[in-house]
View (cartoon, one colour):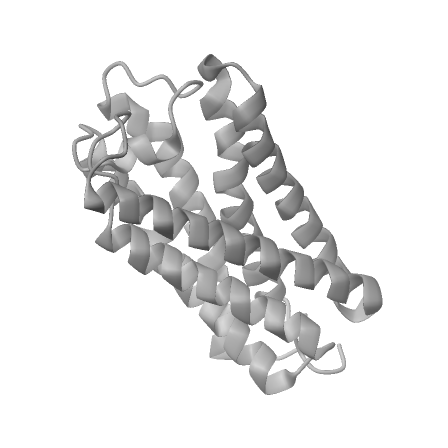
Length: 213
C-alpha cells in the first residue's frame, strides 16, 4: 500500500500515548507528597498542583496528537466507508469524545488538586468528565457490535472491548477498593481511551480503514 499523508498522521496517536505516559510517570517527581496509588492522575495537572508545569510540558503532544489522530481516522473512514454505518458512527463518536476532552479539560482544569469539588470550574470539570465517559462507552459499544458483525473490522472491535473493559475496571474498582488504592484502578480508565487512540492511529497508518481491505 502506498501511504498518503493522512496515513502518516496515524502515528500521532502512538506519539500521543507516549507523551501521556511520560506525563503520568514523571510528573509526580515535581509534586512532593503525591501518592500515585491513592491520588487521581488529574491531580497532577490541577491549577494548584506544583507538577502542573512539568505535566503541561510532557503532555504537550498528547493534547494535540490525540485529536489530530482520531480526526484523521474519521476523515479516512468517511472517505473510504469501510465496514458498516454502525462502525463509522462509533468512530465519529469517539472522535467527538476526544475533541470534548481536549477542549473541555483545557477550559475547565481541576482547580485544586485533591480537594472537594465546590467551584463552578471544578463542577464543569466533572461535567466534562461525565460527557467524555458516556461518549467513550457508547462509541466503544458500537465498535464492538460492528466488529462482531463484520470480520473486516473485527480487530478494532476486539481492541474496543479491551478499552471498555479497562474503563469498567476503573469505574467499578473505584467504588470497591479501599481509598489507598484509588489511583491504581483509576489509571485503568484514563489509559483506556489513550491506548485505544494509539490503536486507531496504528490501524490508520497500516491502511486498515481502506475500502475493501
